[in-house]
Amino acid sequence: MATAQELSDFLKDVEKRAFKRALYQVRDEEAALDIVQESMLKLAQHYGGKPAAELPLLFHRILSNATLDWFRRQKTRNAVLTNISELESSAHPDNPEFDWLHTYASNSSSGESEHSAEALTERKQMLQSIEEELLKLPARQREAFLLRYWEEMDVAETAAAMNCSAGSVKTHCFRAIQTLSKALKAKGIQL
Image (cartoon, rainbow, N blue to C red; front, side, top):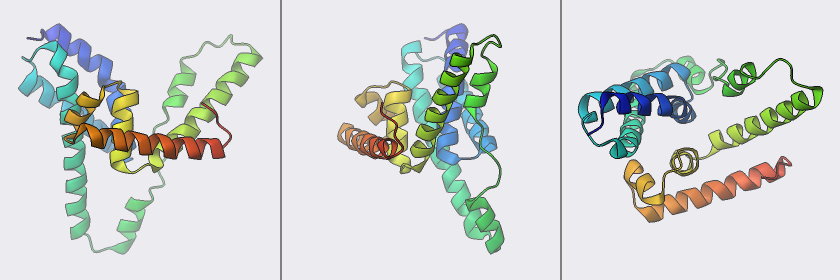
C-alpha cells in the first residue's frame, strides 16, 4: 500500500510530463490542466491505497481515459453547435501553445557563454521541430510513442494503459518513429 508521501512524490514527479502529454493530445492548455488535475484526483481518491509500484500504470490509464472523455465531450458539444465560425475558430485557435522550452530557458543561468547560448538556441529549435512533428502524428501513434519513450513504459505497460494489444503498441510506435524520422531528416535533423 502506497503511503501518502509516496503518492505525493509520484504525483509531483509525473505532473509536468502528464501535462505535456495531455497538451499534445488536446492542444488546449486549460483543457490539458483540467485533464491532469482530474486524473490526479481520481488516482488519489480511488487508488491511493494501491501499492506504489502500481501507481504509474493506473495513473496513465486514468489519464488516457480522461483524455478520451474530453474528446467525447468535445464531440458532443460540437454536434450541438450550429455556428460555423465557432467551429472554425475551435479548429484553428489563435492562442499560442504552452512552450516548455521558454520555461527551460528561464531556468538557465545568466552567466552562460556565447557558445552555450548558441548551443541552447540550436537545441531549442531542434526540440521545437520535434514537438511540431510529434503533434502531426495520429492520436494513437502519438500516445504510444509518448508512453513508450517519454514515460519509458515497456510494451506491456503501454498496452495496458492504451487498452490494446502489445502488437498494436509495437505497430503504433514503429509507424510513429518512421514518420518522425522521415520528417526530421527532411528538416536536416539527425538524431
